[in-house]
Length: 120
Image (cartoon, one colour):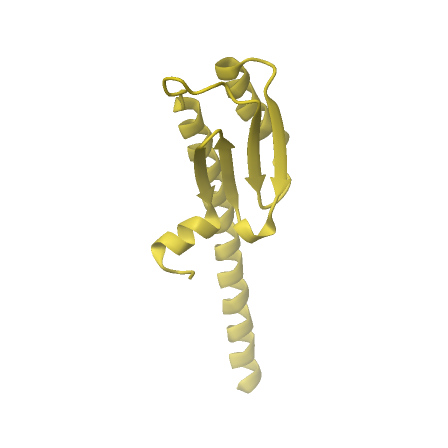
């Protein structure tokens, strides 16, 4: 009887872990897409200079497809001289932060969890 209960408990724990993993991946892709979309709408304010650098922070190395999308948008808006500085910060838990001049697009999973009250 105890071994059956242990088996059920382990099976449920594995199921929960799998569901959480899939949900994290879905949320991370959604956060990246939203950040890139908002960055695409960014425009310089009157008197604001074109950025020399754009800082991009993620929790792991950003996939080439996302890098290319961000860089294509930036080159279209600011020209080909803009430099991209990529930084990995595992504390983000997922998502991305894009900083252009004074504008910050924080679509990190950590920030979203803090906003919702799940993290302090």
